[in-house]
Image (cartoon, rainbow over the protein chains, first blue to last red):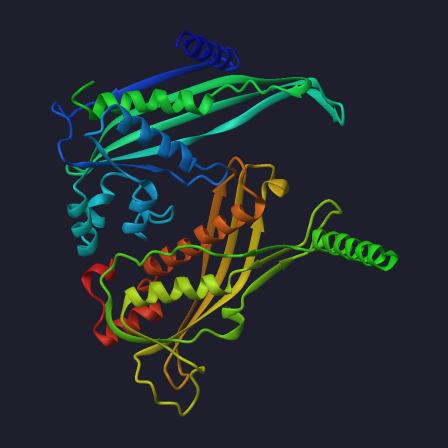
Length: 218
Length: 217
């Protein structure tokens, strides 16, 4: 048993040692928070995909949803692709509403209104942003004898979550998060990547704030 | 014994040659995806649709511009038919896929109009071309709306665009396929939102008494 604990501790220590540092900041502005949570209503988190030079990663959208449900499993977060398919073509990049006022026009389509009612959608959260790789340095040479050298590179993540109250057709909050970190890869025979979990930190930052807004437990 | 060794060597040589040749071949993507049925009230009309051979077998070829690049073949034909079949079946009360094109003197099957889609142009971009971490596909369509005996009702063009971000352990082919699926979804969204806005189509819908308040917006 002792041996097992020691091994677990060693693994944990190694994992924390080989993770590079990440700096992240979160700004939040919300109002009309549901005081007793959202009950049996549901939430959908969608990525904004209007920009031509970047795209909000589907993985990041899924990560934020998973973060919310892992801390409060009473909140029903509809899967992004499931929602987009069920409401096709009204939430495609070309047709998605840009302002809460556009919801009224969307609900004039009877099949759309019926579907929204069936889904019990209360909040629609738009995520906009991306994680980009910044400067890199170093060099590495690999041969049959192994790899030697050192490499380093950075990542910057910037995301904004905009919360729409679907029933009141109004914007009720915004959460911004930015995170940056430097990853390293020293190589003496074997390359050892020390990755900065930049996107993960941004996901946790935005997820925590959304959880505070949506959950009665936090 | 010697002949067995020779046979083995020959087999090995042929296999190596085949692998080398295959490695030099173009990067081929046969677009495959899931296309959802649109959530709309169907128009009370019967539509005929004619998919030409060019359309059902639509393939885009792009030759390599540098020695380190490879040729690309993007085959969208089957996915086009799958998407448009699904879309039109939800958009109109009845849809008949024609086995031959509309022509003068033809009177059956009885349909309100026949839609003939054409893919006029396809372009793609991968991060190696643009230095940004998205894969992109553009398509330009031309649609003809004609009577069963070939008389023109309307003709219009429409573009569609799809992009997908780079992802860990995702190949160029998978990413281009996903971008093409997004472009096809966008084509469906654009078609639905612009169909009744095209002046000649709007007039035709009015004449047929099918221009309801919801689709008129």
